[in-house]
Image 1 (cartoon, rainbow, N blue to C red):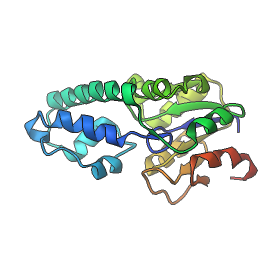
Image 2: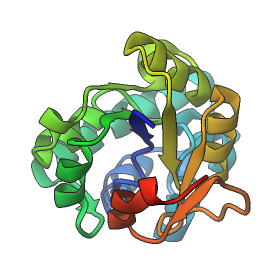
Image 3: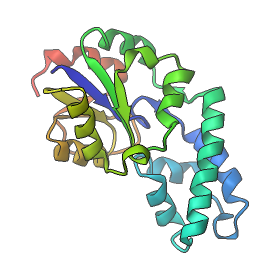
Amino acid sequence: MDSLIFDLDGTLWDATEAFYICWNEVFSKYEETKQGMTLKEIKSVMGMTMEDILEKFFPTLNDKTRKELIDECTRIELKYLLKKGGKLYPELQNTIKELSKKYKLFIVSNCVNGYIQCFLETHNLKEYFKDFEDPSRTGLEKAKNIRIVMERNRLSNSAYVGDTKWDKVASEKAGIPFIYASYGFGDVDKYDYKINNFKELLNINNTKY
């Protein structure tokens, strides 16, 4: 294995409290969304795009209002996260530093443009990651974005680290092994390797999968 490609939410950090604050601030301004979303509901949809989240919880929104909501939620959450960051999982910064000595590191997440950059800049991790991609920049699903990163960086032996069934499906479509981060938001039955905490990635070469 020459590289690790990471999901972000539920894998590298937990930013759901920021979403809860920022999204509900925006939702309160619109009649169709004024009931807002609970923290539990937000956690349940981590890994989905904002378009799919709004379709799931507020299916009656018209296209114009949906776009306005996405734009405003994005603006407010990025401003919030750039200032305060999210909750990193234990030992993440030190583990990333050590992993970068053994593997090339990348991020592919179903997020808006600017979100991955907030994570990297706010927590001083930019130097450890070679590249990243998201659907707002390409218009493509996660599996195809994984392949884009692999092709762009000439990777031949990658694994994808994520926490949800959608991450598992994306890794299968991309044709690479899936490492399940069981401490995250999702429940996954089948995987190539499982980690119970982020630091366990340091031992992954000692296991066949």
